[in-house]
Length: 290
Image (cartoon, rainbow, N blue to C red; front, side):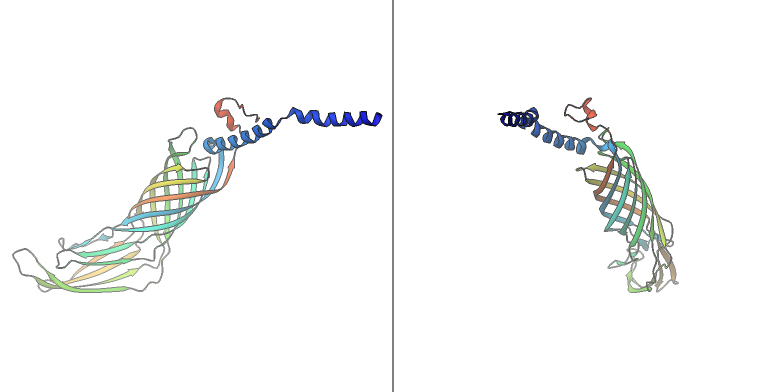
């Protein structure tokens, strides 16, 4: 009998603690943890300390070369817009500061156009398009306070475009132009030679960007940036010869100055958060977490 009593006592000791946590409580804890993760994803912006991300950039860049002699409007240079792309690696600190490094295909052009001809004549040249940038960004206005999930950023940076030993390009054209509607057409001849500089070119950048957090790991950004060319990257020297005029010279310098309009998709692959009570956003946690 003593053995039976000991067996009953051991069974009771095993059943009593188990009955203290029912099946409902077990699933309640799992549900609470899932809800905690959802709250962290939605409202955890201020708790993020550091974040590393990669991005794919798509943008349209416009630039216009500098022309030193237009021949009374006979020769002009036009703005050129081209679609380009780039890849970026960045680091964000407390969702307020960010530093980015990127590679992009950024073309710098010279485009010479003779509009007073029939038909119009245009000659366009470009560099190798390879560019590397270092950019700093600062959040200036959050549109989802206090969670910092979306907002406006200002940015500033420098672009470096390595030079190369690209051979010179020559262009030659002949045609007719009219001095006025009362005059007969006059033949002319145009020759040009374009060289790409071998030294590294530089661009300065200032921009504004609006970012939207699509999920805990994906951001979408829309940007507008102004670019200033600091050095000459492409040079076109043109010689214009007409029947009744002396030969005239003109120079176009492509520095890359212009605008950039882009869209960026970012993916955060590493996020470090502060050890704070995210559930305090509702005053006091009622989900059983301390």
